[in-house]
Length: 241
Image (cartoon, rainbow, N blue to C red; front, side, top):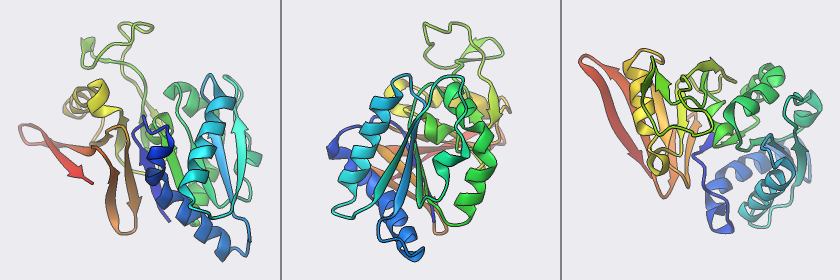
């Protein structure tokens, strides 16, 4: 099974195709487990978690093209970690966006179980912050490295340093999101050039990166940006749909 990472912005029924490969894998997994109605966990740690979890669930249902499955919603609260019951006995796990530090902190107690489930064949879907924390090392929200501005600055967090925290570890390079739309490629390039990370992938909005046994696959309107260290700086290339 695969890890599905969406770069954000895909919030309407017209974006359902981005989520279809994930839903198909979850349904296949449920059928193999003998369930007539596969079960997908949908987790939101957004400030508007109830609304965002329901919206993501609606997108997954639209992506199912008639496949029947149950949606198990978990709307988290800031400062309250997600428990194991949120991901118990499911055939797919979908984690939505929000403030990346809060999403990471809320799920950190179940990182080990998430890795075990995905290694056992349960597909993972991460959207925006949910995609960022899938990495071994998860970007925070800072826009400066060594005090130098490397990306558009959040007015609520001026002069915030970019920090790398432990992520779930489903992919071995850092993940950046909202890349073309919010000018975040510069942050990814600077993080690699500074040695803060060993390499990274940046995902545009309305674009999904699927990481599976067959390698990398891109679905959607935008690009995935690959940034790797090079002898005299960094190497930037794109993976198109």
